[in-house]
Image (tube, rainbow, N blue to C red):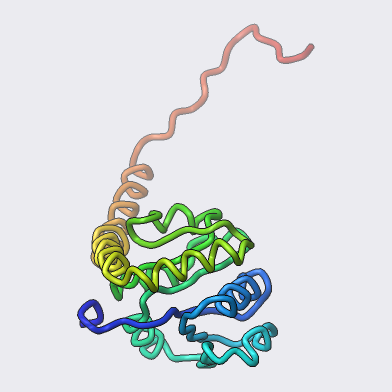
Length: 194
C-alpha cells in the first residue's frame, strides 16, 4: 500500500498557471535542497527550467498521479487564488499523503496545519521553503500527518461516505416535496402603500 512505501521528495499536480502559485513553488524549491516532481502542463512550465532538483513529468493519467502521490513525502498546493474544493487535496489524502498548502480559502479549511499537512502564507516563497525544509527533515511527522489525512479521507470524502450523504440529500428533498405548501396569510385592512 501507498502508506507503507518509502517516500521521497515533493509533488505538484495541476495546471502550470500563475494563479496556481507555481512561481512561488519554483522560487522556494530553487532555494532549498529538496526533490520536486511537477505533474502538469501550462504556460509557466519554464519556471522550473534549469532546476537540477525539479523533474517535469508532464500530464499524467489518474493512476500515474496516484502512484506519484503514494511515493511523495507531501503534495504541494501553492495556489494564490481562492480554490473551491481542490480534488488534488482529497486525492492526496486518499493515498495517505499530507499536503503543504497556501493558507487561503478552502485550502486552509481542508488541510489541518500540523495534523494533515502544513500551511504557509500565500504568495510567500520563504515561508513555503521553510515548510519544505521542515517536512524533509521530519519524515516521521509527515508520515503521521499522512495517516491522519487518510483517516480524514475515509471519514469525510470516501465514495461510501459521499454516497450516503447524497442519499440523505435526496431523501430530504423528497420529504420536502411531500410537505404541503403553506399559503401566505392575507391580512385584511393592511396597506403596503406609504
